[in-house]
Image 1 (cartoon, helix red, strand yellow):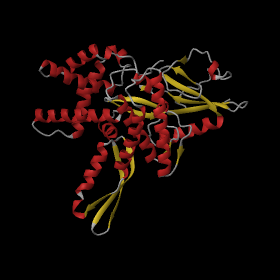
Image 2: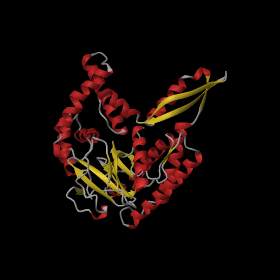
Image 3: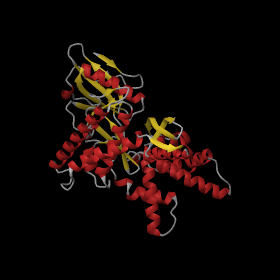
Image 4: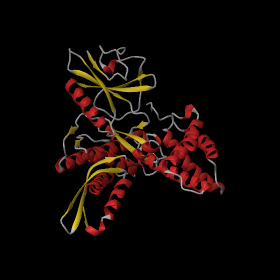
Length: 395
């Protein structure tokens, strides 16, 4: 056998590679929640890490490993590849990927009632993922609810690609390939929701075909917003900044602008867009690495704290000072106060977002300002304590 893994992961040599994956009976095996797969997929735990093992053909496994590595290097939202186990006796191979902590399959989300407008959140997350891939010249070829994992993102969701078996990378993706990819996604999404309805996991009031139509429409709208060219009069150059700010509000960065002037007007076309504008801004200021909407919410709290500091000192507080003091005086003390066993329930940034929401509602009901410490104690008792642990969701 040949085992290819980066050095930061275990060597997996203690696993029973001489047996078919479906027949394994090993103490490292764990049953994790995951989507429907046409392959045999099993999970193993090493200390705090869980790894997914997918049985497939040798050629396919190596190709998918290479593709996932490329997509990870491009910082695209995909699972992290680890290695491939191959055998000289058969054409069967096993692809190893790192389990994505705090990730949730779609059927689990539909089984819980706390996400208002869940179908909309799933649609928006899937659309953002597919648009992001297409902007990078990636043709997925098998976008479906089962091939996406979702992570909570300040009340919304963020989508991650799980299966790259049919994925192709091009310098640029054609309109025809994009259209075909959308057709595949819509068909698979409708089929996945119909299956859940037959199993009684989704309300019969939900129209899967309407969800499919919304996916297509929202994809087209987002793609248009991110790639269209705008023409301005030469004395309206301020509108360029407004256009960039709007794209940033959508969660994307503009890395380059193609600008051409013909003497009467200025025409701009965004080039090489990258998702994660707010998460990169938060990481720059604080070092925290969180989802996009979580970052948006935390940045808002930093600005409020910075303004409060300025009022206390009667002078403006520099951005770097405000962010550093917020991290040291607000965020970190609150997160340290969360009992260790409860941190398995949600990501820290999601806990902080929920705490802000809880503090607002608590203050509204009590008719007074509520300190963070009081809000946290109430949130832990009434909300977080009763939630299931979602860091590594078991079946």
